[in-house]
Length: 396
Image (cartoon, rainbow, N blue to C red; front, top):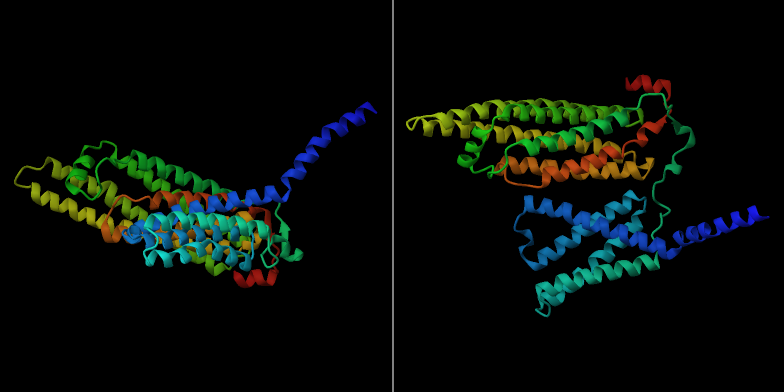
């Protein structure tokens, strides 16, 4: 009797905690916090994008309000899709988010509200209406949302634990490549503005470890490309269309070739050119500087196309992951993160081609996003579609 009483006494607090965690209030609070974080992330991601594409866009209060409303709403809607919510729920929540700013634009244009008041009351209205909507309609999965359970039972089987795990290999390679890229960026000279050629060439000429730092940067990019090739294997085993995987593999191979050319121009040719300029006599100094600038401009072009192709590679594999959205939340998050990362890389590539190496947070943000992408693909190793031998032979 004593033992049973003690057991009941131990379980009672746990049941109370479980009931509390499953209560409507806690679910509401969790959803509200999730939405807030997603909105902040969306604002940060798109804010970096607008700064690169349209620097003066947010200089006017009305444009800032609409841009911020879009950024936050898109981030929230993307997270709702990742969490498995249906189109209707996402559309309703998005309308609730944008409505306060749209309504307040009228008194702003009539000069009844200042720009600061527009931003303040727009955010207050957004968060208040979001709370009211979540309280009225609990944040749960909708009926029209895809779910792993919707997949026919005979279409999937559990992969053997002892079998190949290309998704795990891909994740390790992508995270390792990102880490090497960060280390290479830290070791690369970066005190002077990169487009101030006289100052930055002098900084490069003083560097004694320039060449091997660029070998490290090449290695990091090669590891990332290898990670995407391994991801292609995982996607093939999961049943993704072979043509899409082959397109991603081809883009990855072209990316590897361009990063090799980029590092050859930057890591070897530019270093020799700036060294020759730094040690040239007064009579040759101007011509040596012009030669170094020519090499620098060549680097702009190669780096621009490298970033474009890397962005295309990420976008292709992200598209393949989005086609596997029925595999669950992690795969949906991987696909969405990859789509954002690829888009930012493409924008960064276009910016480098147009303006050179201006300071930008886009590469670092894109790196963080494809790390999230890498960490979300593990479920591809656990579920593999059973395929008909005839269909497999046709694909081959």
